[in-house]
Structures are given as structure tokens and as C-alpha cells.
Amino acid sequence: MTTRIRAFVAVELPEPGRRLLADHLRECAGVAPGYRWVAPDSLHLTLRFLGWLEPEQLALTRARLSEVRAPAFRLGLDGRGAFGPRAAPRVVWLGAAEGVAACAALAVAVDGACRAAGAEPDPRPFQAHVTLARQRTERERLPTLPDVPALTPWTVAEFVLFESRLQQQPRYVPLGRFPLL
Image 1 (cartoon, one colour):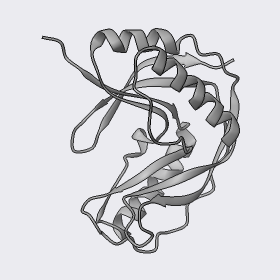
Image 2: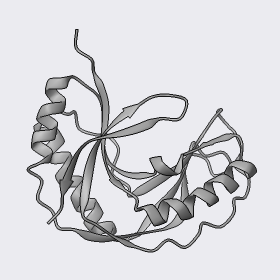
Image 3: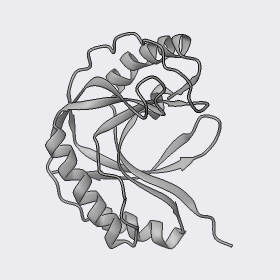
């Protein structure tokens, strides 16, 4: 019997940004307990969600991802947004402000590699963002949140294939790191 693995491809946030956001997320959790706030060490920008993969497809995906050739780029985050109704969004996120085009180009290259490995097309268009929180219960209202701290842009020099281990707070385990040029 094979064990399927839930996987996705992402860009990690640098440690200084995670530290700055840790205090912010703690403060937001106090203001909006009806949302499940992401643990700082789990913050990432998803390039492609893959879902549940058989070990063979995961190995093929890893091989195809190693063939991706894209330049390193600067990425800056700024501006909170949400998916869903304004008063009660399903997801609260932090958007990309600098490097949006380069990040989107990398997402296209990663998507091509994943599709070459047999992944189904993703029906949702790519939007460069870092998820900060998810609604715990439907129609939970989102109160006014504290301002997001200013984050320093950084150079994205690699992308990562992660396993997503579902627990009360998901845990992400790197399965492969792929350097950018």
C-alpha cells in the first residue's frame, strides 16, 4: 500500500520577515479569534498547489521542477487583502507589491513543470500572496486589524516543494529546493 503525500510548491519568506510578522499575527489573533492565524514558520507564497500525490508522481514532479530555469528576483510584500465577502472573508492575505511579474513568471514555469509531471490544470488564476489567516466558521466577521509592519523586500533565490502535513496547525516539510539563476 502506497502513502499519498499532500504537496505544494512555494517561495519561503526570509527569517527577518517572519519575525516581524510573528508579533503582528499574535496581535491579529487577539483581535480576531474567529480566524485561524498562520504560524510564522509556516508563512509562504504558494506558486502551485498539487494536492494528494502518489510517490511516483511526486518523484516525477520533483524531477520536472529541477528542470525549471528562471532568474532570481526581488520580492516585496505590502497591502493586506482578502478572498470572500469584505465583512466576513474566508482568507486574509498579504499581497506582493514588488516583483509581481517575475513571481507570476516563476509560477507559470512551475505550473508547466507540474503539468508535465501529470498534475491537473489549476482552475484558479495565480495571485501572488501570503495567507495570514483562514476563517474558522462561515460568515465570521473580520474586525479592523492592526496595520501590517513594513517588510523589507528580499531576493528570491529558490523555490521549494513542500509536503503539507495536516494537523490542527498544518506543518510544511521541504521535499526539494530548486535554485533560481
